[in-house]
Length: 129
Image (cartoon, rainbow, N blue to C red; front, side, top):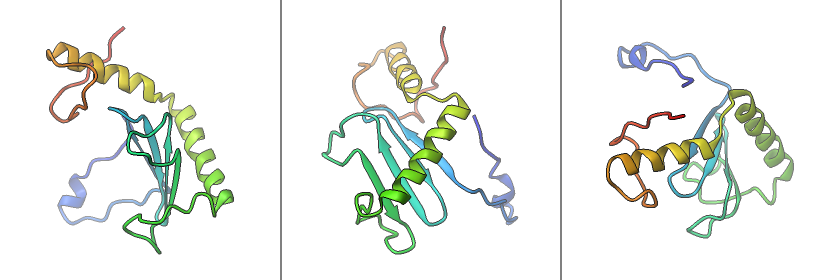
């Protein structure tokens, strides 16, 4: 897992900044996101259960509550962030399908249905062969 300890921040020290961060949501919707200081792009790998579009782009300075998806009106910004996100996913060897499979496996080991949403903080997800 890529990351840095937050312990220095808890002690009042300033954390080094990052150019961007990535996140994934895989329990139901298989989404990736990339966030910079000023923008957030959300990319869905399959149709959204709540009818959200496949690509969402938010200008976090002008729209901090992420109410106005500007992906369609900002195609160059959208493509640029999507390219950065895809490049990071490839360089990290990451696959949201691998994570989703691990979540289903962990749910089955816990005696739960593999098809219900899962709180990842409650279950330890084990990599299996």
